[in-house]
Length: 307
Image (cartoon, rainbow, N blue to C red; front, side, top):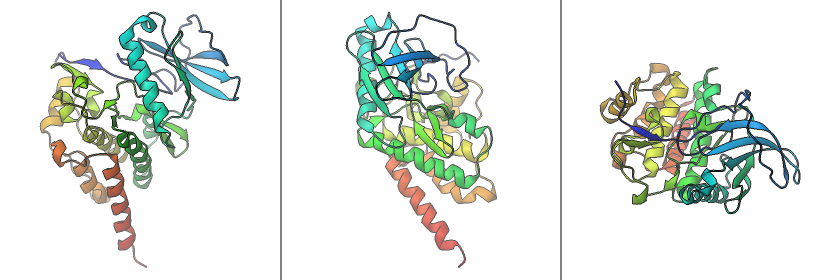
């Protein structure tokens, strides 16, 4: 079935992404087609590690502070667009304001003048997607969920909704330590101007909350739903809904019941159910609420352990 949906997606490799369906190429550091490299004061460009329609991400040496960094640079023609420049500036401001251990760290940015760029820590440990391919034990999955929820909670506390929570947008800083990245389609909570027209979807269909498919204003509960899909996938090695097209995936988000976990994972079922509740008003409202549920689950497990 051919999809009638159009995407505003993010995802440009090991740092942050951009609107418009980027190609993630940075994690394996495979060669990318050569293009003229920008000249940035204080940085020596090494090579391209990610590319999208509007921006390119480079691995660079930070000549002032030392070490490797990821620098996202607007492409020349995109830098001339007021709309794209404003969106880029908003992304820079959001990331600069967060400052959390489990969110990718911003070094500096310039959204005025040319070229526009955003310099961030280089996270070279691959994505959560790659980590999931090796299998994750349930307790490790819960620990990673706690980290993801902690970073996302800080985002929600600032009134921001990520809108594209998925394994590719969690990067492994070190074994067992993840950071949230790619704020290219983030928006202020409840911002009606961030609504999209029918037939358009912000985010990624396989992880989109039902209300995202219906064009509702952005809310923290939508990120919780997406994070619930990620958690289920860490536990089971597959997503809870197996739609093979965009429309199938969105339909399953709207009406398909949440699958039951096997007996060995039954302790996580209530948390999964609360994160994947179809109705946003009955779902855990934000990542802070997810953290509280995780702590309650951990406390219950300790209390039930024989002494």
